[in-house]
Amino acid sequence: MKNSLKMGLISALIGLLFSCKEQVSPLSEAYYKKSGAIYFIPGGNGFERGSRKTVADVASFSVIKEVYARDKDRVYFMGCPQELVDVKTFQLKNRIPVDQQHVFKFEGFASATSDCNQNQLTIIDGADPATYTTLYDQLPALAKDKAHYFYKYQPLHVDYATFSVINSNFVKDKNQLYVVTDKGILSLHYKTARVEALNAAYILLDGKKLLYYEPHQHIGLLEINIPSSNKIKFLNEKTVIIDQLIVISGKKFGYPAVDPGSFELLEGSNGNATWSRDKNHVYYKQQIFSEADPKTFEVLKFAVAKDAKHIFIGNKIFNGPDVKSFKKVDKSRVNHDFEDDLGNRYWYQTNKGEVILVPVTKK
Image (cartoon, rainbow, N blue to C red; front, side, top):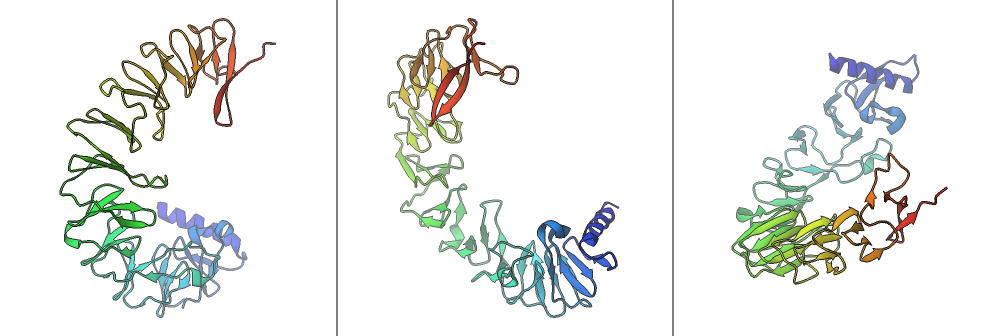
């Protein structure tokens, strides 16, 4: 019932695109018959996405699935006849386009208004159509057939029998370790018997070497030698304590004498430790901030914090307000960010990356 209503609504919308006197018959959500021709309209929305009049033979035309269709002579993708595909043996195998001889891919930007030479399926070199399958649940863009692994449609030169995914950034075989990058899966010089995935970003080699890689950050592969690895504790995805070592985004904590047993992150995101502390000190951007008392210190908003004696903006003392009553307020209730019991009010602003508190002028 729902499908019938949906097709009826789509047909009505498409009808607006053509003359009211011409009959438009929906064949699927993407293909329509009108005036003796087949049209491709992505999503059934000719107004927003355009339409394509195909060269398909109406009598033998049928929809395979979604944007794929065929007639007696051709296979169609996005309404475009495909040059490399065998029409007799073409099929979608678990959503993968294949024929008897080849596995196909599409790497362009599919459009109903672009030329058909830009909407062509191309062959994945060396892929076996009978056994090719995707492994996207293990790693995006990873696939395999009976003899090869593929990443982003390119065959990997790895040992097939021992290849395995460690985490989203690292893979391995019996010979070596590999890192997953935007450009492809690249071999590393590490050869190790024991590889442990700590999370998506960190791996541990033989319990002695920590590797960190984060895509899109342009920092490369980071390596730290670990004296021991008996106790591993993650504070967040990028912050890990391994015995006596604190590591943030693949680098040792900036202040070497930090106490790992009492260490805690107070403010920071995306691998940036803006405020942190242990039992002895408060740290601003991983450097000791001796003016702050760790026992009474609290973060109010990002770089703004206070303890029993002072208000801080970053690693500088901010004078003026009453420290004891100074607090962050709900800006949906009032038109400022901070206030104290003496009537001082402040807006929180940034200027060239620096946080400033701007006094609200009293009227």
